[in-house]
Length: 170
Image (spheres, rainbow, N blue to C red):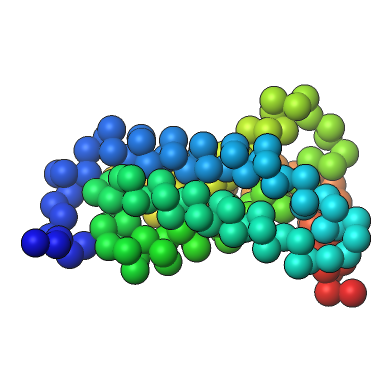
C-alpha cells in the first residue's frame, strides 16, 4: 500500500530524517561544485547560458535522489511527483542563490573553503526552507535572509548581479 503525502504523520518526520535529507542536498551541491561547477564561469565568459543546463540538471538529479532516499523527511518528498517538483525548486532556487552569492562575493575573494561553503550551502538552505519542521525551516530562511542582507550591505552587489543575469540575454 502506498502512502499519500497526507498519510505520512508529522511525528514520523524525525530530526534524523530531516538531517539526512539536508546532508544529502549538501552532498549533491558539493558533487556538482566539483564536477560541473566549472561550467558556470565558462557559460558567463562565453555568453552561453545553455552550458548551465548540465549544472542545474546534475543538481536536480542528485536532489531528486536525496529526496528519494529520505521520502518521509517532508511531505514534498513523499510521492514521486511531489519529489520531482521539490527537486526542481531546490535546484533552481539554490542556483539563483548561488548566482547572487557569486555576484556579491566577486570583490571579497573569500578563501577557497569559505567560497565552497557559500556556493554549496544554498541548496540545503532552500531545502530546509521547504521542511515541515519549524526549526529546520527557520534555519534555512535565516541563512537565505543573511545572504540577501550581505548582498544589500555590499556596495554595488545588485548591479553586478543584474549585469551577470543580463549578460545571458545578449
